[in-house]
Image 1 (cartoon, rainbow, N blue to C red):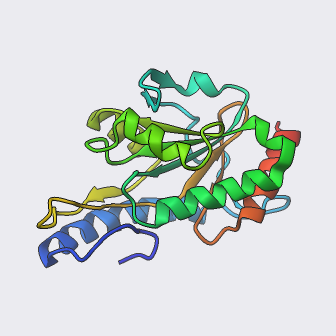
Image 2 (image 1 turned 30 degrees about the vertical axis):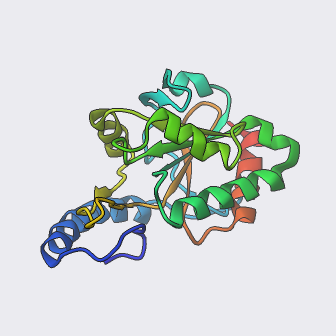
Length: 214
């Protein structure tokens, strides 16, 4: 199974087979996308300009209010799909993004991180608010919604996720893609940050978008 899917415990064999099939199909589509994209000067991340749709969603904010992409006009927007009960990958990714924002200094004022839940059953607005407060509520906005709303925005950006079977204590995990999507001030998809990309690389490219957006 791909190393790009995280946040899971051992699954029964049948569920592994089913998810592997769906994951293979999803990664086949993503592979075609990545093959047509590249890292080129001046970018240190993966340049996806022209390969993914503009920022668009209709969800609920961690303040409990309906929200869409219009709330982030003229901002550099980082979008990450995860969930509040994620044991390690989500906290690690958000910490890396916050490290990147710290490196930006005053330029971070023009950046927002949208943390979109792939576990809306548990991730209420209140739960998301408490989660993002632990990082930086000024720059990170938790977003949740109905199953249909989450599926719609995930499908738009080719995000793979799947809930595991419940454990005896009724807990469960959600396997999900770890990609961070970066949109410019005009809400166009410009870059993808993968787990191997450092906070320094992310900060470098965001600074270029802040000062040289075209």
